[in-house]
Length: 203
Ligand code: HEM
Image (tube, rainbow, N blue to C red; front, side, top):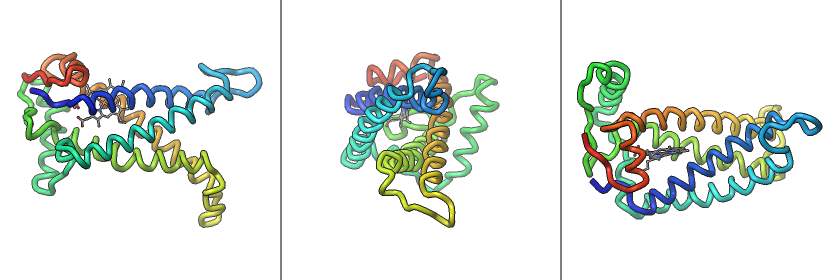
């Protein structure tokens, strides 16, 4: 079943590579000592590569949102209120219990339903909530003169920094869980092959 057109595969691979560079350089900036301790890359190099990757990630993100708006792929991200909670619970129950009893997926993949309810919910949260906040707070840190000086007596720069680090942390956790759930297809490698070839392998 052909589910991942070329533009999604291209967006996804660029996004994944840039995201990993941003995690590594972000952690480097956090933990590298300007004098004698270097975590992976030096502080100056980490800043440079973090900024370059962030700009490219933003352009790639705008490409993702625009393409989802004008293509059929956007419909997979629309959450319907009908049975939302119960479907989410069914999927959670499958991942935490029924899967280990060898039961079948409660929401098999079709061309009408590419994502199961939990996937859809987490992708919407990651791509349309955490990602914009990560990008906006990152832009604020890149151009600190645009940040409001004080919000309720607290430094605007510190608040923007906390928001940026929190979103980066949440999206990193998202990526780890995302990679794990991507091993739960027909075979452990099926979904990874799908996002490279474009074809989903059904059970
Ligand atoms: C090395 C890192 C990554 C790997 C190995 C990976 C793997 C995959 C695989 C196998 C799929 C296809 C299965 C599916 O449709 O759910 C997929 C889709 C997806 N991934 Fe990732 N991923 C990675 C990083 C990321 C990151 C960092 C994000 C965003 C923060 C992300 C967001 C998505 C989204 C939104 C889709 C669905 C795209 C669509 O079909 O519309 N992934 N990923």
